[in-house]
Image 1 (tube, rainbow, N blue to C red):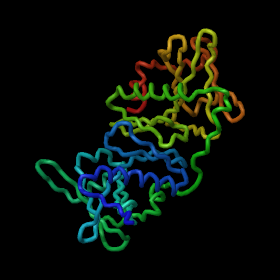
Image 2 (image 1 turned 90 degrees about the vertical axis):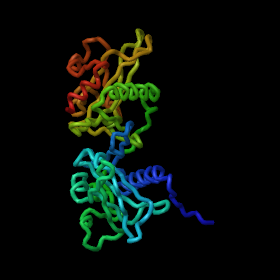
Image 3 (image 1 turned 120 degrees about the horizontal axis):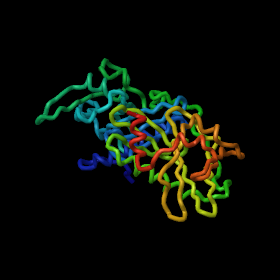
Image 4 (image 1 turned 60 degrees about the vertical axis):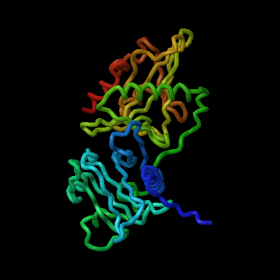
Length: 324
């Protein structure tokens, strides 16, 4: 039975989506988890962000795909000039060859893409076109930016090495924090969405310290958040937050956000903690595989944490000012 995939006209969006996930899959496979993928919750021109765990770098990426070669055997990729908004973001150009990627990929930063591409003006809109072949020979201007599919991760500095450490079973804490933790993450994402200057990304899968990634649309800077939510009521005031020691990677761009959930009123506290990951260990104790942070809402216990308190209502403004 013929199972060859043919991408007909009208299915270009589906082919492009498949190409993105094929690229993410290759990068994860080749780096053995050393490159972690974050996908946008709102499309502002970046298809994904790669977190290179070896040095903590964040790499914004746009994936551009075509489903067939030209009669001359080239891949032609055309984009609008207005879609290239970040000179340092990388464009990955690929051929979708049936159900797989072509043998070669183009990996080039947007500034170079704009400089070397052919410029055309059509009905007042500027278009940029590149053309490359499925081999590494020749004299094409794009030759220095071509890489074989099997060496794609190498182009991103993601050679196989230390990746994401597998997580321990959360049940060992004797607490079911799954639902409350998810609600806390959604609350922070909702707050961040109030700002036009911030774009949020989620990791797929969620395996590392950063659970919500924030990118400032003007400064292009990143801030990673691990969001923790802990419930309390009149009978049990103590809040307890668990951080996995094996997967916890402190970094200057990573913060731990702690939300308090009032069970009596079924709402979050008006303020939260925003603690630099590089400083949080001074407030925690070790409990087996966990770092444990304990505090009480409104108490003087851990009063040194007060410097990290921020109003939930102005959370987006606080994060925005940190990145601007």
